[in-house]
Length: 113
Picture 1 (cartoon, one colour):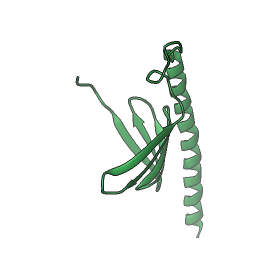
Picture 2 (cartoon, helix red, strand yellow):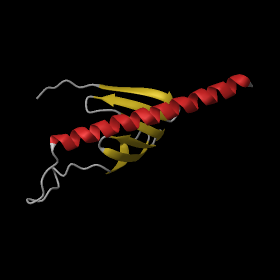
Picture 3 (tube, one colour):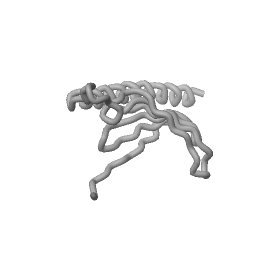
């Protein structure tokens, strides 16, 4: 099945970027070979050997329970998923504002020398 996909990464400063996709925004912090991503699905930690294609990813955080739910446990409602996306957007907006303020302060400090 074909579908429309969208993904865009905006680098805030070295080691930090905001990622935009159809499923919502996320923030990535780290360096090549080791980074942490915070998004609507929770926290994803990735460590790998750059250029080798080998990596290990660990995810923790928000789980809808759809894939691991027991027969008697209700699945997440669409409202729960929408709330997680909203929380993700708010978190990214706050982190981006703080990162921008830090970048401006560093830039102002470098310009004063």
